[in-house]
Amino acid sequence: MHKMVFGRALGLLAVFLSTSVMAQEADHYTAVSKTAMSITGDVWMDDFSITFQNDESLEFSALVANHFVVDDKTVAASVYRVKDPADPELQNGNQLCGNGAVSYVASWALGDGMTAIAVFTGKRAPKSDEDMCALYTYEDPE
Image (cartoon, rainbow, N blue to C red; front, side, top):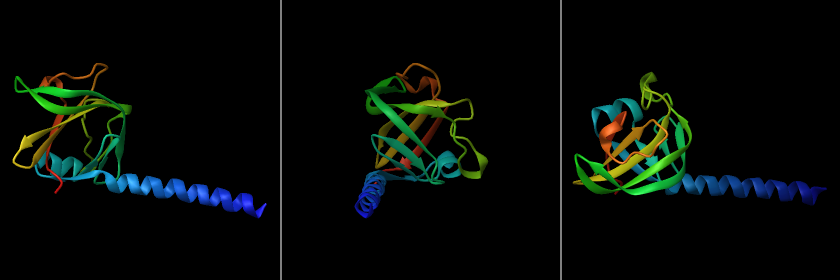
């Protein structure tokens, strides 16, 4: 009996530690644009999720594209499908999109150590920045 309880406790500890390590491995992006500072705050992002400064997060189900059109130019980007679309309430009662559940998140380098993160609603993966409901700018992790 004691071995079974101890085994379960060790299993739960392993799950907790692996979750903590994954959260620590996400890249930290510092909010730079006024919209990012007032709505998302800093974010932590990897290939699995994005977590906002108030600890709300969106989990990704798939990377659906590795390029994206910004201002009529194709750029290297990561476009993720959100596993459970939502429009989380973030800082100061603001929502991430404000126009419905966020179903896709795209990120790309702006140069000079900056990254853009755009959010989208809709059933189809975005191919450009044309239909984004919000754009946020961050300083890249060091």
